[in-house]
Image (cartoon, rainbow, N blue to C red; front, side, top):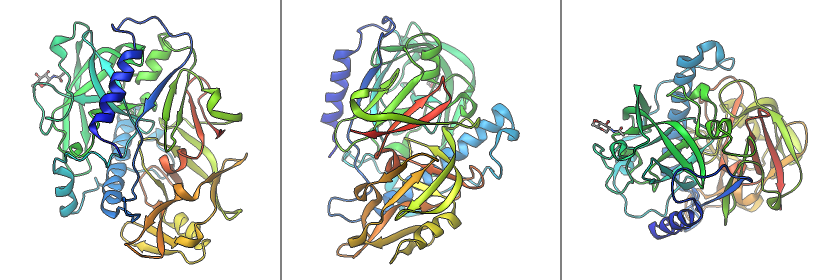
Length: 421
Ligand SMILES: *[C@@H]1O[C@H](CO)[C@@H](O)[C@H](O)[C@H]1NC(C)=O
């Protein structure tokens, strides 16, 4: 359950721990940011929220489509993974587009991990989603914004540290709409960690996010997929010496989720971090992944993008078909969206492996709930979807990240997994 009052509590808690003015000392150690609990794609009655899953999938397709457009603009198509292509923008079916644009007062359904940041000399506060699957910081515009009444908005005029930059930021949404805005640099502080002259944009239409408690997104991937073609927050803060290490780490738990900026929180995991080099694609992409079902490798040697801004997991349609073929009793439950189900009384043992340990996905994290009320088939958190990211590229979102301590290291160019305590 996630409501406005818990957001405010988090905001206040962060305010109390952050330095009051946007000129803090560089932090000596890393800093923990509490992230509100996320609800899942499972409704309160245990059934799978099919509509919301389709909205999430559409958003995911369009987010990565935008990433590829940005990558092409910044580095050219040569930087694409083999087989990658910019797909048509995905559009929601009409009834879902309508549902999505209804302004909901109920904010229990949040599906991103959010936290608070402050922008400008006057510490304007925002609730944002920390997204390892994109690279820009954007928030709503204070003077002009559609469907922003429940949002915190950015006023560049009242911040003494804001500077207008050339160019325009643009982003396409799941409902087929897009929005844009001018580009600024300003001081941005996350839990006391300051990034000066941080590139950001303020957008003028948030109708596609009106059912979401977030104000904006803070991208944690690489500059190559930035629409602003500018250093993302963490890289900028690290190069300015504001954090003691080039690593940040997520612990996405059912209670007490955190993001640690500037190292790893050793109290949260055991053993070593198993690191894998990231390929030079702009994404947190590790190679050599395999999918394991009931102890048997069913698909191997694929690329994996680790994305905290995506709810479930996606693989190429043919690979995902093979994956479920290894699970007795599984069926393709939604052929249009390549969603599969399996017998609820036999949740499969599934894991991913990058040449080291098997990183298992718990039954709770793999099972998204029953197809319908009383059904004995349950929907799996892996769906077949060609996101355009390249041949054999899988996208592992929170359904995977919730099972491990995930470390993103910009100085080693590596992503790592460790066993949660
Ligand atoms: C907000 O929109 C107004 C009107 O289009 C524009 O003049 C202003 O620069 C925008 N502010 C930001 C922070 O983007």
